[in-house]
Image (cartoon, rainbow, N blue to C red):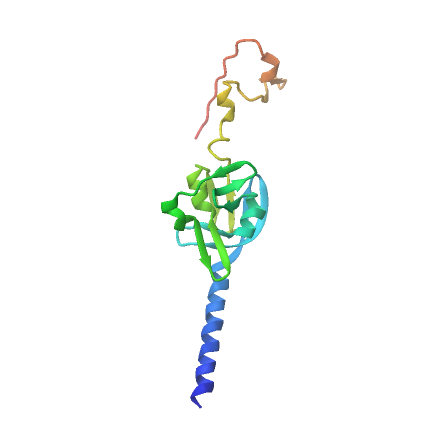
Length: 167
């Protein structure tokens, strides 16, 4: 008589654990390199985004290698003392903390909890890349009469740019 009750209790606990695991993993949309990808992810208490290695590669084209997290010839070493902040294995699935990686490479991240969307902006090395050449990027704006002008129209001439923002 005790064996059926014990077996039923074990089955109940397994189902509860599986249900909790499904509750912890949810569908998230990740926008990376201006491309939206829907993934199954876990979000920790700190709102960090943990992706499976398969979803990491599909979403960002980065893969975890012995030398670090790499995409093509670009490779970022994972600090050895902080490896647990980047990688976690639960069962058969290995998870990677994309939020921690963004902090490592100084990549801005915005998260919309209500809609389950993460947006990853350009890495610090790609932000303001035009500053390396001291050449302003081209843009087109209308003047007071509605006629459009491009900055490229004034190449070779001295130009004073006056900007203002209300925020």
